[in-house]
Length: 461
Image (tube, rainbow, N blue to C red; front, side, top):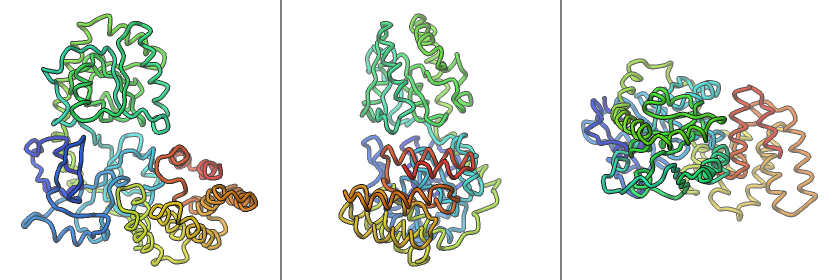
């Protein structure tokens, strides 16, 4: 099978190990840096400014893909004009807990969307045509391996990863419990900002690598820890771990009520600890990405209903909104938002997006221009909430108490009993600040419960 992909998958596994897969990758020449190593693309192409037709013309002679695979559209821009793509388009989404408001408009683009188990029902509710479970993670074989020269395993329990309590709010209290193991005499190390070979060397020093997933998924660390020869210890309620490792034989699981006791028993039985770690290391070799890509053949062989019917306005708006959290330049995002507005000049969503994109491009200096756009969006639909939310945010920053009070009253009025249509659009602050993450989590909860008021409540705070 011939796969065209926007991620250099050799950062995970050798191409020679991708049995039955002929891979061609595309992206800007200066990307992709993975753990400090540059992985060049086969085709130099900027998806933030280029179209599918241009990408197709740039493919190597004789290469005709069977599937287009787009990883992480909340991080990587989509090419324009994907409606012209004649082959199945498979999307892979990951951190939707952080970026869901920017992803909801991508429903027109994918024949199949791959996500973790918890995301399946969520994205089906969001009108994505065919949503399937697929574990997208694996250890990066160029980095994660047992290193004979790494020295003794002098860390009893180790964790290295994102320590930002805003992003990792559920994990933060657990890290305190991990650190607290030191009171029991365990040698504990918790650190952030460790990547690449340094990260692998750290895991090679650990007897136990503690891990906790955000969405009950098998995340990267779940494969990296055993690949580096440490025992994988993670939450018992994880939805996917048992598909990959046998508990108590190839990994160890714990609950809220027995975490410390599980760790103490492992540290008291070095033989058991080493036996489980070794078994996990053997098993993880089967879970390399090259082996897992075979599922794509099944996806292409058993297609779903195809991409949903959509208008050009739907597609241009969805692509531009998702681009807000990617690496695309601000002026490129503004141009995409302007294209959406030109297709639907009276739609409050395009006016609202253009205000956000203007600030994404020019920062606080664009506040006045954005404010006027949001006023127009609010006037276009007396029930539309995102524009009122953004007006209130700008008014609060202005220091004008009368303006702020007026904007707050209007926001309260609109957010009292909103419809889903009245909530469709990005809001300040964008990115991954605490309020933005609160809104992403609230939107997830609201969609699952089919209660738009749950999401509206966070917009009016």
